[in-house]
Figure 1 (cartoon, rainbow, N blue to C red):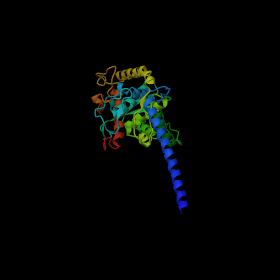
Figure 2 (cartoon, rainbow, N blue to C red):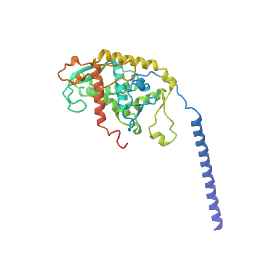
Figure 3 (cartoon, helix red, strand yellow):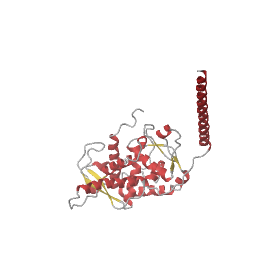
Figure 4 (tube, rainbow, N blue to C red):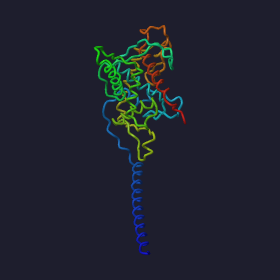
Length: 324
């Protein structure tokens, strides 16, 4: 009996020694990792590939997006370079606006304004027109442009199936409401559950993820499981982003020119050469049902339509301030 007890104690001792040794090794390794994180700078990737209008707005958001009027909330947006808190709704609108205005200027897409029956739903229940979009040629390589291409294919592909047995041509015009909705569906298929924060944040995160893949942004450290789950802001590759400053300035000038050529006099009031371009500053007569479609300014219609569809999509989601 005493011999058996001795053997058992010896085995327990060996197990404790081995477990203690492994715990010590783990402690030493983790201490080394933490020391390296504190002392060593993160590895800066080599940035590559073109950056579209949506990516430029994201990287230079402090030059395009208005500051947050109500800081805090569940979906918070920050400028990559200045870390200033920005309005998440305006952030999403500015990326879409810059992309679509630039694609129209380059002849990639076209717009038309057509009559429609009032929807009697907010934010513009009495609006009697809608903006439609048509793809004229291949879309460029950018995150939201790629999602737009998927959306066009989803909508037009369904129309082709319906008319497969007829000789009728497929209508290639798509309402901007349907297009943005399909874009968001495609985007959310590529986002993890933990990345989703609502329509505004999902659009922003999708563009940021693409910029991480290109090397213009860097993911923060994710040493633990909790770090991987919780949202942490990406770090800028400053040297690579600085090389895009001239492209961002050129984009700003193109948008100013587009608004002056295609916008109302009201929309162009106090339009400076720098700073955020107000999305919601539109012709107050835009919703006048007696006004003919030919009199409606395209720039105002584009911004109104983008605001309308994102607002409608946001109203379908839980409040971003719930539980805060």
